[in-house]
Image (cartoon, rainbow, N blue to C red; front, top):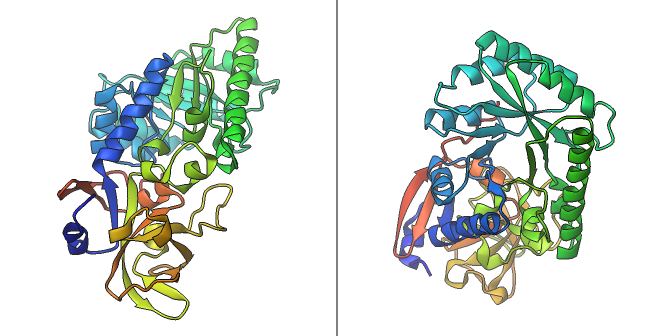
Length: 378
């Protein structure tokens, strides 16, 4: 347990990361990948930290996944050499910025497409810059966000279109089962993971029958990866949330509260008959509850006095958030103004994006790591 003296000395709100839990989570996911003989390419949109990403690479990750061009540029500048951008890029100026940041010793940037327009724009940009680009077809396995449906008649024509361009290289197919965060049980998550796997293998086989090799079959989403019964046929996993975890995978049943490495340290700045008021509002704690929403009995987070962290008898609910304040429903015990509390957020990824730095807690001391790609949304 960390020294209460250290936590009481920290100005709040502060985004705290338990270093030992962080490293344990990284090792466990790498071990899962190794034991199932799949490559691990973690999604760094969760932590946006060069320090954390480098630890993932050092332990065995083959590269990283990012969400945006801006994120990619941060890590390209730090000499990360294998990057997948998991959101379609359809703006030529973004392509120019990205390819201008790629040096000759970098493996081809890998991107996703789900349309003729996306392929055409990528091809034009690659040709203009004379740089090779790796292309994945994004497959919609149930989230219904980006991607082609598994039975889309354009699958083969789009792969053929990719093959016709000398500066494009077909990498394979990629999916994200983000709807797994809406699961209410481990069994639901397992079913989603298995459906994703089987769907992707069906698409792979369909493309192969059309004469197109499919080098990679890449899947993502932390709860699906942790719940999966089988990775047969899968070549790569891209979880992101696993480094921190939060209340979403806990609800699904693939993690425990004690596994979560990221918490928000806040101070009780006021109180009334109904609430303790803290200085960690939506600009720190976020009001995001995931794509499926998860308010209800866990509100916007679970809060604990620092002396009683994870003590179920001392657990409080963050009931409301405004920009600079959170309102924590009172229980059968009192907290004095000035008391410090630790909050487990519903969704750690947007919390990290709002933070300029992490306070890394390690036994009796702490250091700060920058959140290098915070706010890099373009």
